[in-house]
Length: 139
Image (cartoon, rainbow, N blue to C red; front, side):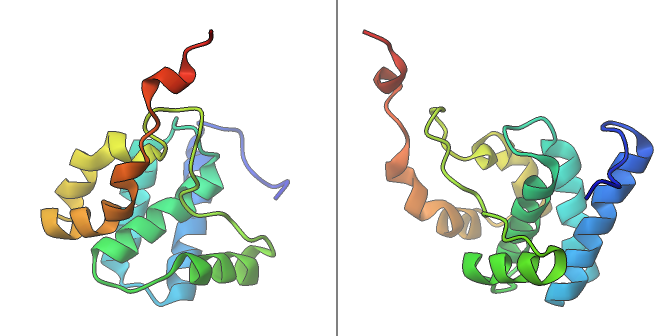
């Protein structure tokens, strides 16, 4: 991946949009899911995730919320097949109150997929796993 253009350039955005297209095509995702994953990726740049793992997260989220069944294990398998690298999907971040970056983008995601029940189903397992703010206080 040494061919990656300089961050923040148009070529850089195009590079990662192409990676998302490649992943979506490999997974057999509809064009709308791929386009939404690219939109979400563009919106979420600057989170704690690197660009390619963030792209994989976005594809997973859009696939799930659009009703296209995909597991985290299948996502890892797809990234391994495409890029010879298993990419972790939506890992926990123990350094933050909100342990996954998606919480900050809930409204944006619901604009793409306005199904509150699907969102709740998607995030159900995470609700009891928010880190207590006291955890971060040094004593």
